[in-house]
Length: 245
Image 1: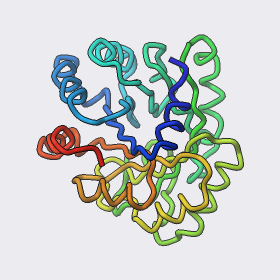
Image 2: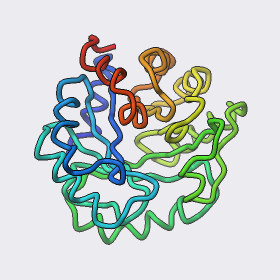
Image 3: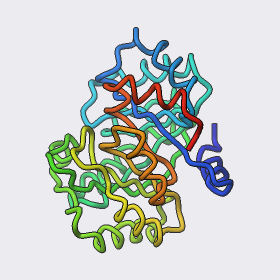
Image 4: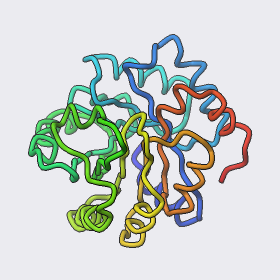
């Protein structure tokens, strides 16, 4: 599958809003995959992201294989480390942590991944990744040793996102973090979107339909749900029953 990014662009051009479910390999037993993906297939979810900040070696490939056996949706890696790369997926968000200044996550990990990626058929999608303060420490902070961008410093967030576009990123991902107390604000989403000519992904802390609608109305092209999908069956039922936003 080599058309994930072009399909994203086409759907955005048609005025469609996209939704991804993020599945953490450490939190998804293989025995639960079939039922979980059945629910996903019955919803208006458009993409499945797989990855986590800390994932045990070897389990991502097995999980992706199980997911692929039960869906035709594109499965895209959202890796926290090189060890999570598997050719069983369709694509990979090739992340660079633009919000931090740790060279390991700006370029070192990316260089280390090249040998693996060259031997896969994964669609590699360059993605600028910005971690935004959400009210509590996140796993991304602990793993990368970087601080999130203060959510009140909107102009700096906007400039960082735009710098990512200038650097050639195909996507910008604004992330509040798993289980965030505060999702990315409408103001941040709106002002970043106004400056970008590339798609905007927003994730972290979106726990209900109102927050989902707010993210779209502010300008998010693709919203990612993770914790809410894992813990709130009611929210996920709404994705199955409600018409697409």
